Length: 168
View (cartoon, helix red, strand yellow):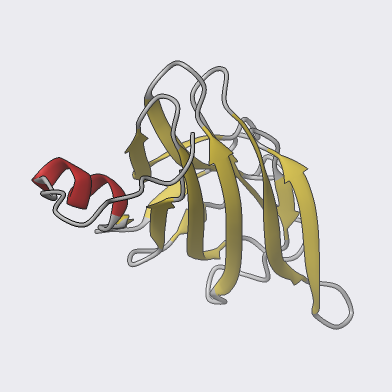
């Protein structure tokens, strides 16, 4: 699908403006903690509806914390409706003897490991994704879990955000 083109004299409908000009956006109202799980599932708040046959550019800015390095860590990704195609780029800190920035290029539905450094240390993760929705509408969501099962919560913190702009 190509980007909609308007001609002189066309009347812009509310649907056109909402579909093409207004970004979809959501922020987390409260922290969400997970422990003893390594199966990445959709965050209950960082989820947005998408239309069948449309393409979107997604941006997630996540703040999180967890156990000491390698005790739990985290993993993050983006899920999309069945039949969707696209890719994501995940940028986050890796906690080693000195923190390093790591960038992964992955397919939708996969996850990238993100280090943690103690429950008092908040860390950033950024995900950029292009999602081409197939014939089935649905939701695009930030998916996450602990990378290593631990009784210490790995937490995605309030005010993390997911934003999408329709691009075709």
